[in-house]
Amino acid sequence: MTMRSVDRPIRVFSTCPPSSDYNSSEYLRRVIDIARCSEAGGCTGTLVYSDNRLVDPWLVSQIIIQNTRTLCPLVAVQPIYMHPYSVAKLVASLGYMHGRRVFLNMVAGGFKNDLEALNDPTPHDQRYERLVEYTTVIMSLLSSNASVTYEGKSYKIDRLKMTPQLPPELVPGVFVSGSSESGLAAATALGATAVKYPKPSIEEPALPQTGDWGLRIGVIARPDASEAWQIARSRFPEDRKGQLTHQLAMKVSDSEWHHALSELPGEVPNSPYWLVPFQHYKTMCPYLVGSIEVVADEIGRYLARGYRTFILDIPQSLEDIEFTNAAFNYAMESVR
Image (cartoon, rainbow, N blue to C red; front, side):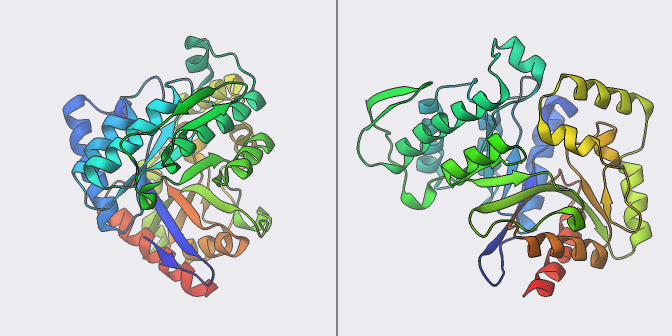
């Protein structure tokens, strides 16, 4: 859903389900269903996860492109998985074969055990320094008609040219986590969208005038608030096992946003902001739950603070997307 505010468009992305939640035949059908629902609901694209447990995100992105007309995969890209040339080649190849734009969600870290298994002990801040070099190489290859030479601390290429050439309108948008100082510095250096995991809107400060800002949230909105909360609690029931898993993940994570959210209360009185699913390890972002109007008010306050890109959690149905769309439309009216 691309909606126009007074200054620039609003972009909303859904999220593709992880393969670890399904068997192979069920997963393929679920990816296609959610991609089509996301497109029907007007989403710009859909986030495709990447970590050691999951199937390859580029193969999933190919399935999404083949089964939709306009939806753009937002592919999570981790430098330790492949050379930047390979990423650029995949983007250029998808553009050549399908004429579809791809977005890149540049990931500096990941699960600690995944990094250790791949023998990557690089400290947190240095991973973001490496990410800047990595992304610079990718974007240089995709944006240039000529050969590219680059020499940095982690990557070096010499007169390397990308073929097939990517049309300018298909050059990918880049997202980077902006929840830490090093992540924000990386996003600024790359001119990327800095994505945060927000606190309740009343606790979020106004953003700087420069830069592009996004946030990661889930939304369960319905015409009646009680129906929305009934769906939310049924979809994400509290359980002790989930709490313990979350606590264990906290101990091995060096993610600043993970620790910051874990210090917040699960529910905020008289607010749609809800962290219980995150605290029970059922999802990895805050949720907004309530009537369409109440959720719209919260979204409107995020908009007023300067956020223009929203990455939603995994939708369960077209109904989820339609009511979320309604909340965004209400919110847009409030800030015109």
